[in-house]
Image (cartoon, rainbow, N blue to C red; front, side, top):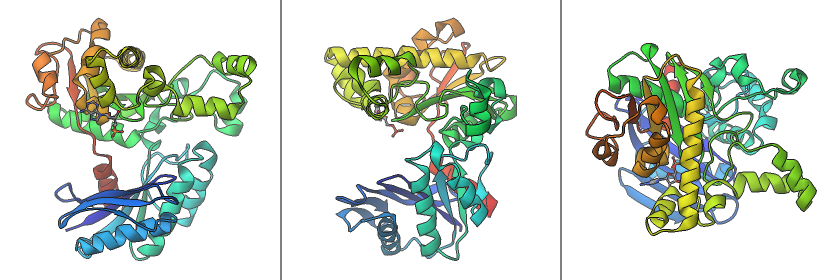
Length: 392
Ligand code: AMP
């Protein structure tokens, strides 16, 4: 039996899952939220659930609570072979997962400027986990690594090249673990080797990105230097005219901090709807005729379709369009509206397959004999666990 503890440390949260790699089962999972303020542990294990206030001043205390939860559940003693860490930015240094060494830590630190909210928290998680589990190997799995196969003509911005050479300003892409997992899974469900397939994967959750996957390799994606580029998201705008920055500055006197807050936290589904960043809430409000929710979903699906269509040029053909993430897996409405905009590719939705989220049709939601669109549930924790096991 081998188990991997998967950790995803954010600035004020620690998510975890203990994965049994042979069966791909999650033995226990949960999260600590609101670190530093009113910290709570919400977790689930074989002996039941907990939802309790903890003294979570920092990542160290949070991880200690997670460890004592896992000990109380009696799941930690048996065969913990590795701790797998989700690390957001690996820059151009990492094109795959790696065993964490002091050199790897230095290289991750060197990417902090590119992901100032995420990488320092990921590093903190590694430091604390190495202290709590000194005998257990630690592995880093990067969000950016899968996209390191994107060619220069797709990753360069049309800016002076010195900004790329001297400052690393280029498109990196994110959600790589999810795009890699669902492209392999889609191939399995289609009964074909991934090396024979041309796929577009759309990860639609709170953050949204799509990826062109040629023979199992990312050849273009919608996110860029930061996770703000591309498809509109819960609270992020996605791609907009860069001229808007200057206009906001000149006409409203906004500085870059205010503009960053607008584009990261107040835009996307929330900004458009004036109601919520949550697709479930918006779909319900739309059904009751809420104008903002209706418009937000319309803009979201149109722009998503446009990004998917743009990615198609990176591929010789599309064997399947794959929907995943909380919205991609659950919103029949978003899939229906998006595919309607993609009629140029010949997609013809099967209403009943789509309504059942493809569960009775091997993921497929389009009519037989028409181009394939499908739903494939993502499982980033499992891929992090499998990578970690393989590396050690
Ligand atoms: P994730 O970040 O992958 O957990 O996805 C979160 C997003 O998925 C939120 O916008 C949720 O509203 C959305 N979501 C989850 N379940 C549903 C559902 N049944 N219908 C529509 N959207 C959903």
